[in-house]
Amino acid sequence: MELKSFKWRPHVWLSHGWKMLGYVLPMALACAGITGLPISMALASLLCALLCCLLFGGRNKVLLTPAPFSALMLTASIAYYAGAVSDRLMVASMLTLFTGGWLVLLTVILPRHCMNWIARPVWHGIGMGISLTLMVMLAPIILGVAANNSSWLEQWVLLLDWHSWNWPSVVLAALSLALLLFWRTQSQPKALWVLLLVWMLSHIWPFTLLGVATPVQQNWQVWMQVSLVHADWALLVFMSATIALLINVEICQYLPDRFRYSTGLTGLTNILSALTGGMVASVGYVDDQALRLTRSTLLTALVILLLIYCWSWWRAIPLPVLAVIALYAICVQINWSELRLYYRQWGDLLWLCVSALLIVLFGICAGLWLIISLGLIVMCWHTIRLRAWPLLLPEVQIVVQEAVITLPQILLFANANSLLHRSFDLVRTLKVQKVYLDVSAGCHTDVTVFVHLQVLARNLHQQGKTLYICGLSEAACMVLTAKKLDYLLPEQLSTRDAESLLINPSYAGDPVAV
View 1 (tube, one colour):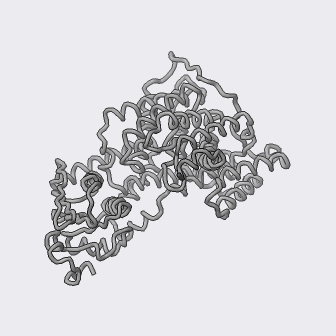
View 2: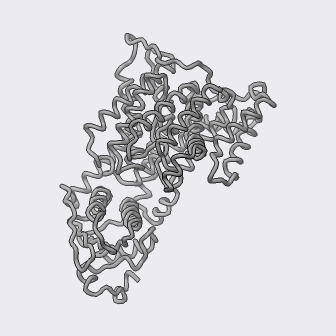
View 3: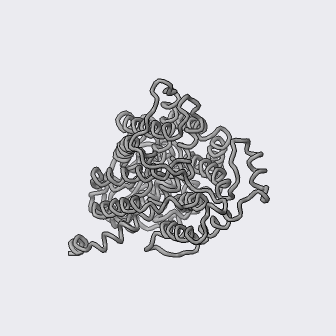
């Protein structure tokens, strides 16, 4: 009855569509602004993303939009391109088309859990390195100073020269940031309201007369005409492959269970976006309890976006406001709760810092390939040394009305996602109250294992099941207890094996777990 009531209430569609658009539209406009591309390219890309999600969404609800990381990679790729095709719009369209082709190819040939073999600190290091680079790139836009391609030291000196700052730009960015931080609301898309407020202020104080930069203005073109004779195809292929790799990294990190679907849908969206004059799109939103990505919501958001495009109010949005929205989107997307797991994990901290440093020193393109290659080499070395390859699947048994999962191999960062995901599939449909995970073969205490154990415990908790981890070494049990993992209380950790726990379920005689 509740679903039927929702179906025939258009004002609910409008509310959900406005809220969804309030998330993806400001991010898309910000990505086009900081990339130096026309706003019309972001709107065309967002239209293609909504249309593909509406037509091919199915049960896997993922919303696509231009994202800050992919926009920064697009900017770096355009800057690296030094061929005869000098028009940024032409290069952006070709890179978008090739990126879509690479993503479709990766959907077919890349193993499902290939990128999950790399340790979680490497992903976090990549994200932090790209975030730091993006912040440095956005700082001149916010301060209203002329950006250049000089060294980090010269860039730092330029930013410290406060006499050259455009103070109207700084004040406008500060006001926008204050609204985003201190406006506490869950039901309203505050980023979109900030854009509308700035648009109204532009009629009172014309920002262009104050020296505040605005995005590139150009009418929408369905297809950018590219000179095929003078194009540097090798460089275009390499740069588009780098953008596709970054998008694939994001999908593997945030959507490991929907890898093929999300990669294929993103590739199709980018191909369509390139043909309609758009820019690169990536994963920007995942269906959750706060906002369901239903077809009615997607259709409403698509209609509202068409009306906004015809209105063309977005042409007056200043670049400093878009830069602040991009920074805010980055901070919101960071999973801050996972960072606490690095406490006293010196090996993982080293991987995180090295990965971020390589991105900063070698640039996004070269640094990303270097980190991924190094991570895969280290993964192979660890799995062979610890005899964790080839991958052996876990087994499940029903003992005394409870499920017992036995891991045949040591649990470490290279196989944690595959083994624990398979373990959840084994007990997903079983009608049991408790699930015992026996890790007597060994368990490494690293951040990647912590994250995937939390995911398994949370998924079981949502089904009304409780996870117990047994067979731990004393050192591993003490570390897991100290981490205070979500959905894993100290009494759910034990050094005894599953058989002894089922015979005597009391934990009183287990001094390590208490």
